[in-house]
Amino acid sequence: MTTIAIIGAGSGLGLSVARRFAREGFSVALLARNRARVDELAATLATEGFTAEGFVANVRDRESLRGALEAAAERLGPIEVVQYSPLPAKEFMRPVLETVADDLVGPVEFSIYGPATVVHQVVPGMRALKSGSILFVNGASAVRPRGAVTGTSIAFAGESAYAELLHEALAPENVHVGQLIIPRGIGGGEPSHEPEVLADKLWRMHSERGEFRVYAASLD
Image (cartoon, rainbow, N blue to C red; front, side, top):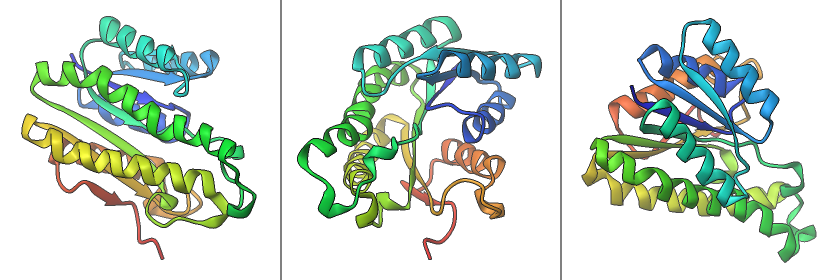
């Protein structure tokens, strides 16, 4: 059995993705900073007959992130799929003229250093499997920067560029890198934005290995 590692796991999209992949035979590693949250999610999945375990990790702490992914692979099986979807902090979203250099440190650690740490931890295992997917989940500011959320706009742009470069570099090794853009947030009454619908879209990104960037809905 191989594993999907969901980084930034929560009770919305993370849980829906966990169920979707678990139904396809994956074990599930749930990574987040809050121990109680990931343990509760894992217990919920276990009651439904799925194999899941929670791991504590902070994406801005490289050692904790590497350690959690290593432990997940040892306990649950090789990591074949990663979903990188932690929720950005509110302080990352300052207006552009109020944003100073120090305000960008957190967003860059979160959206660039974190993904780079994850990639270099999991790609050797994916190469051994000769298969894998690394799936990034972002809001619209990743492709359409907004001055009201400067930190995330800048950092998500860097994350997008890194992910697209990975898409090109890893495709010949049967490792798919994709990005799902979710305009206007998850839920909110739009059927295309419901967690179960988005989870199915992420499953298809992994299983069909199409284009790099997929949109949950039109940006407009």
